[in-house]
Image 1 (tube, rainbow, N blue to C red):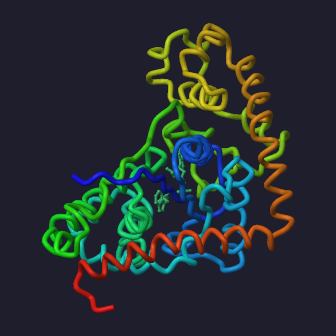
Image 2: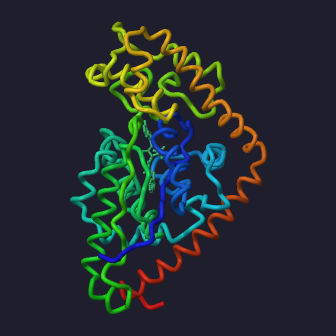
Image 3: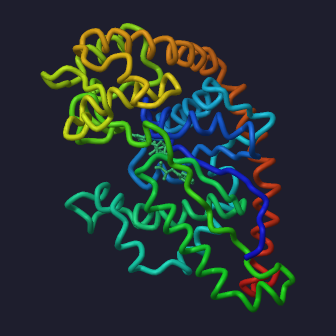
Length: 344
Ligand code: AMP
Ligand code: TRP
C-alpha cells in the first residue's frame, strides 16, 4: 500500500469534568507525540451533541478542554488545536462514511450500547453514527496515528474498516484520478503504558468517567490540592499489604489501579512502584500518591484557571487552529469528491 506521511490526530469531547483518566490515557501521550510528529488535537464538539447539552455549558466546556490542552503542554503554534464544528469537512466526510460503513458494523459498537442504555429506541441517530464521525475526524487529515485510551479501541478498528472499504470500493476511481493505489491510510491506535484504562476510585471494576455521579470517583484536572488529597485518601482499597510483584495485583482491581496511576504519573512501570512500596500498607503509599498527584496536577489546574480567565485568547487559538486544519481537510475533501464522482 502507498506510504502516507505520518500525522497524529486525536480528540476529546467537551463534556465537562476532565479527569485523570483523560490526562493519563490520552493527553500525556498527545504532549509526548509533539516531539516526533505533526499533530492535530481537536475538541470534538460535534460528538458532544450526540447526548443533550446545555449551550452555555457546552461553550464553557469547549474552552475548558482547550485550556487543558495548553496547560498540559500542547503547543498550539507548532501543532494544531481547534474545535471540530469550525471545520465543516468533518461533518461532510462523516456523511460519506455513513454511506460506506455497514449497519452491521455499527450494531457491534459497545459504547453505543452503554451510552444508549435500555431505551435504545430513544437514542439520537447521531449517537449511533458517532463512530463514522470519528473516522471522518481522523481521515479528513489522512492521519496515521491516533493516541487514545483503551475504551476507543473498537472505534479505531471501525475507522480502519471504513478506510479499507473506501479504498477497495473506489480503487478504480482513486487510480483514475491519479491518487495512487490507496487514498486513506489505515490509522493505527496508540494505546500503551500503565494507565490506558484508569478506573474509578470508588469501584475498581468501573472506568473513571466524566459522567459518574460521585465526584469522589475521579480526580478532575481542575481539583485543588485539598480535593486531590481527600479523594486519594478516600479511594477504595483492600486489607492486604501491597505486593512486591506485578503478578500480585491480579484480582486486586483497586490496588492495581492506584499503582498504575502512580506509575503513569511518575513516568515509570508498575514494577518500579512495587519495588518501593511492595510489602507496605496503603496509608504510606497513599501519602506518597497525594504528594505526586498534587505536584503533577496542581500546576496544570492553576494554569487552566489562568487561561480560562481570558476566554477571548482561547477563542483566538481555536479560530487560528481551525483555519490551519481547514487548509488540510478541504484539499482532502475535494479529492474525495473527485473519487466519488461529484461535480465541483
Ligand atoms: P472523552 O472524554 O470520552 O472524549 O475521552 C478523551 C480521551 O480520554 C480518549 O482518548 C479516551 O480513551 C481517554 N479516556 C477517557 N476515560 C479514560 C479512562 N478512564 N482511562 C484512560 N483513558 C481514558
Ligand atoms: N470518541 C472519542 C472519545 O470519546 C473522542 C474522539 C472523537 C476521537 N473523534 C476522535 C478520538 C478522533 C480520537 C480520534 O474519547
